Length: 436
Image 1 (tube, rainbow, N blue to C red):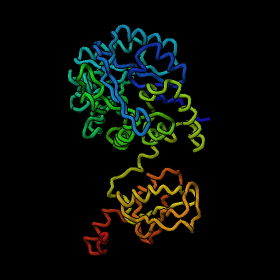
Image 2: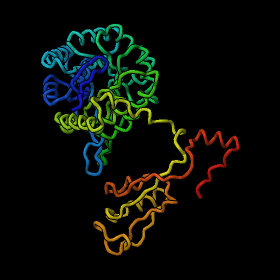
Image 3: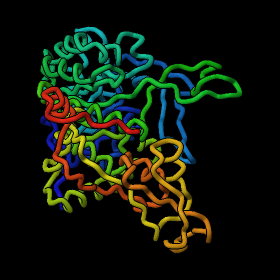
Image 4: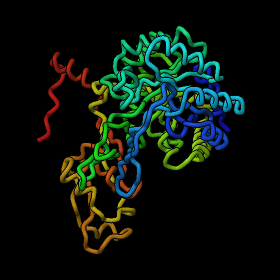
């Protein structure tokens, strides 16, 4: 069985699954429950000067009967006193010495950063996470994403922290920025030990069409909130890979954003994360989801012959490149398995109206009835010569494996856009003809 233990920037934990800073990590009681369920670490709900929260605080995007595909919150940092939080961190660390307990911090001045860093260390915390990502409420006070969106300011504040810190420092980055790599580089220049990303995305999830007030509403008004959950995973993966691929960053990465199962975790690890944080999925289904995450990731690593996550970490990073380096002569086409086709014809409609009109509806007789098909009703058939391999038909098909994208040998050598432009300029090749 694969060894899931990690050493993340000098912070050890029995597995890479950490509870992210947020509502599930607000108290010692919750931290105890998390560790009892099997989580490897807890990043405490952000500690700073206590704030006053509002009611209500959350809203969600539901899609096709699936609830909380996207989750929005306007909740701020901890509304409990620093004294209470640091005392409970000590209590948790004393009881769970082998697990990671991270103090998330957010204050304003250099003196306050020094004070809170020392208090976190005195509490027994294994590390510190700097919250440079909160996109609402705190940024209006010059903290949170107001810092994370300005790499120069972030570099200064990380420098303040590093003056006082004697335990590892993780900088949590905001996705509400043009290029997250610039903020990651700033953290590196200032001496940070690691980065974590992404924090929540500035959002409005929906509008109540009866009251015309966006959700969540507070006395008839709302506010821009922080968006998270499964819907943000593609954005998080992109930003994690960007930081992992950048040679100037070179820091351990804790991946955050839409992780709800072991497959999500494996994808984040493959794109450069050596540790993971989860929040929304816990709020949706509870702490025990980590059991399946641990079992699933361990089984996957075993199946690939990896003794631990190191063999997987970053394995997909180099498989991302600029578009101009992709092979223009690579071709694959859609092929339909008529033995499993149910005759819904969604592939035909999608291709006809939204893609390249290369699927025909033909007589079903040569293909037999198949599952759920009606005698005399036509079935879809791909014109392979016209198929551009866009994948749309396979994505809309409701039957797994019914439509496969199959590579086809074109007999032409690999050629990327840069090669094409160079050879075209030299007169070595003719222009690729446009589609009629």
